[in-house]
Length: 107
Picture 1 (cartoon, rainbow, N blue to C red):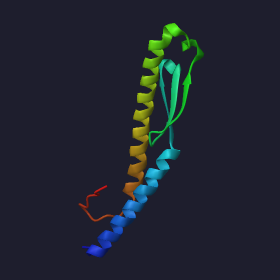
Picture 2 (picture 1 turned 90 degrees about the vertical axis):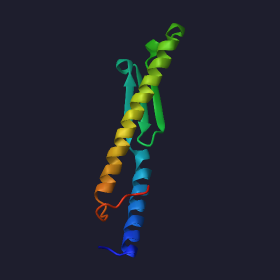
Picture 3 (picture 1 turned 45 degrees about the vertical axis):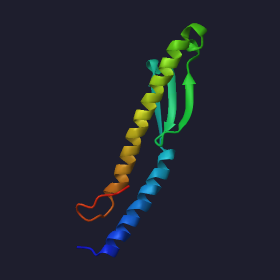
Picture 4 (picture 1 turned 90 degrees about the horizontal axis):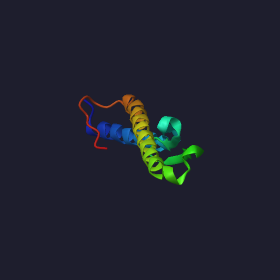
């Protein structure tokens, strides 16, 4: 069984790795879409919206409600994909950490 100092050192290393992984999430880009691709959203895995692309066919006053609905759906799609990408990235980082059995990460 490792002593307390070793456990603290492992926890600090784990925290440093997780912070590095969190910073990397802004470099992972996902695409969300709705309306068969009429509205596209690019976002980082950290949740930052990078760009919005709306097909010109939707830019008519009579289509306002539909455009709003499609933008919301595309944002939700991008957010879900960003969450999945973030979870996958964080899993990669934590799988390599050497922590004692049963050690719970408080962060």
